[in-house]
Length: 252
Image (cartoon, rainbow, N blue to C red; front, side, top):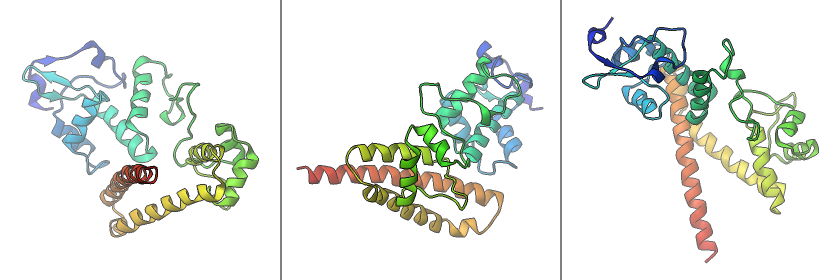
């Protein structure tokens, strides 16, 4: 154990009750110790990312009298959960935070796997887990859009089905936005141009990462995912700005 365990510690009742409750909450690990503990699973984990999670109140490490961060075994497991949800399920931090809130409050029964948790309230949009394959009927049920309309989007190339006719977990979101545009008077041919543009940018990103993907190591794999997500976010923001600029010019 680290010598830091002998330092005076400031702690709150909230941090002592945080999930997971069945592991030690005794603060004995410095931030460097945490990185070493998780390095095998998350080679690119840095202290700055852990501090970022703390700023978002996803984790609540203890503080010594000298304001040094100290982590418990429970904190390490909580951090592992956050990192796995980001890496394996591509969940946004806001959703992960809600999952952790439900764990902390006891709203979720012990033994319930996070992938099966209902994160969103009933009056909000239901979203399937990343990697899920959906039938046309399931997409219709999730969106309220008629099966025939979903099928029309597939035929028009707005949606892409696999050989078994199933759609990706992103299909409900695509259908919702496509339906909005159709209600505004656009046709499926016009809506498909948005998909064509997205596909071109996805190819651009994956091509730029081709050499890194070819390495086929855990570090390279994690770097590819991180870079792809970051690049996609940059392109999305740039596209939004360009679209706003062009509308401003066209509507003058």
